Length: 163
Image (tube, rainbow, N blue to C red; front, side, top):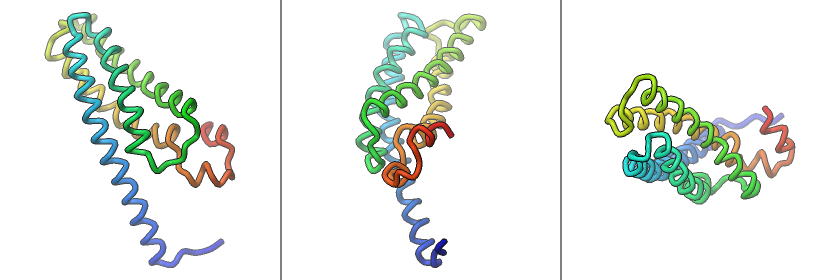
């Protein structure tokens, strides 16, 4: 076991902070554009019904976010295959979509708010915000993996994801 000198520990922490800031800022920019797409399409399609509008707006914004995050936010992370990454990415977004649909449905049906009401729009924005926190963690944990964990091959990828 080797011990790190204080300066190398400090350098490592500084490097980790720099990477986290890069990921967060790029994730924020991609997320902001995806948010505008999501809210814009949700508002545009609201006359079809809030749930249909949410599915349409999420499908478009998620597709944009996948490519943006893969090529900008997490571009420095290991590539584990387009199929695997896309399956996990869209699976995570399907979980957040289900959560959003449940909450929106609660406001539209039992609470009887109009599909196009400002309240339903605010509920949509809040569910997007909560989903964003979950997605950032899940993307780093399951989709865009740390290169050291993948390239070292000390851990089987299936075992890593099962933790």
